[in-house]
Length: 207
Image (cartoon, rainbow, N blue to C red):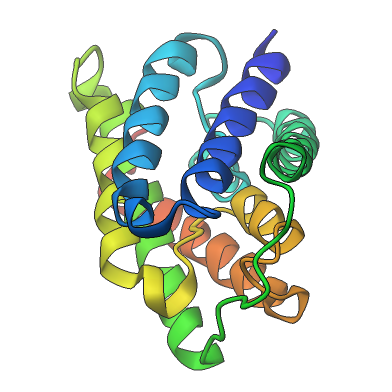
């Protein structure tokens, strides 16, 4: 069931992104609130089953940290990416026309922004949801959701605030970002997740 939970969580995350950003006018300014809230809720819902990653970068972090096998990480990635794509296509069905003005990114700035907040997201996930010292806490879902909320407001206009290759796939399908930008998200997100895991391992050598 853990793969199903990863699919469900990623699906609703990407679906919420699409539905709150596309053709919502000024209300789109509130989209980060909805996205952060649904992520927090989904993390609480699925954390006990799959770890509630919903993000290939988080799964990579968990693998490097040692709490996820390579096989599980690979299947998580497949489930997450399929869910992101299906969520995007359902958004198209509901919304109709796609945006005709995708975000124009400065590659260097977008790379840095995506790296920083993906690092922050994975750093928070590992330290609040996997560390022995914080085991059993009741705040990990809010902590994770708030990182995405803050990141969306902080660098949304710079990078699109994906912090997640599955979200990046979704926003590319939705033409919120062009396909030529996909490499920026993929590389920055995975490197950010890997660096967060390496720092966690240095800080927690006995885990």
